[in-house]
Length: 388
Image: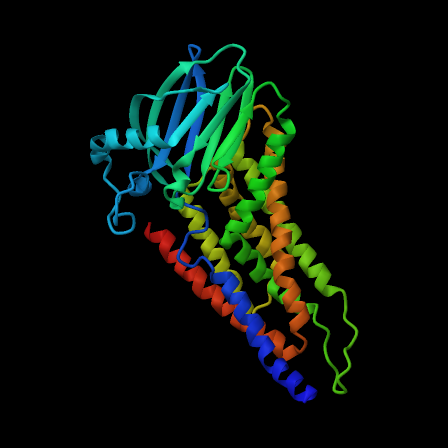
């Protein structure tokens, strides 16, 4: 009975691993690589008064205004229609954005509304002025309560510029109330924030992970020991470790170069083209895995397309906004977070493959089914991105 059970398991574990790989590849098929629905909140000081600026993406206005049944059914309002929505937008913001300075409520007084363009679309910007900021201000408390209304509003990237202070943070549904104490050393907290956001960016960026994992898939198969005719495992060469190390190193080096170049303003390409080429890079890596006629260098392909992926990382970093006070530290911290998230994802995928896949036939099926799934998903992404 035990032998029969083992035989059954051996017949189904390869399709299961392939299915798991495809599911990992497709968990966000319908979405673009990076999270949408972000907003941007900036607090500054002008003539000793608090100035507040809030950007909301236009396609999220139905969520902001809590318009029943229209969030997914109606198109976003045209730019020339936004002015007629100024009053309800202002009312929604004044209701759900609460700021206190040393416990004193900062009532928001509307100043102006405009339209701005960011990488991911059209935004409506509202500006407010508020109370006078005392010279001895100790803390500012921000309650960003839109998430309690509708979590589809995504995250809010926060910047505070006050006298000699500059702070960055990110509001989301689990961190909608945050306190900012003035006068404290902010270097390490800022570095920690950018490291966390770098890891979150790569883990939420399905396209970056799919490209890397698809290139690594043949290398992961090299870690499987061949089985002899007698059922004994044959000694395994260390070619797998070299393969993985070269691919990961090439990808890391390449995207680090263009991430830095883009942040310094030396390279700048439209986001639509960057995202489309990233989808194409995934298709190419999957096609290469499916053919046997042409031999190619995985690490060279990782380096070539890694340069484009670095520009995609730069777009995510711009959303957060580099700290001018700790420019190099935050750039390094974001990239470090990307690498940590990258390593975590590779280990997460490699572990079940190494445990469950034992034979050469199983290895071939994993590469075939996994690459086919990735090819289909990346083709959908490419069509989506070229059509937007």
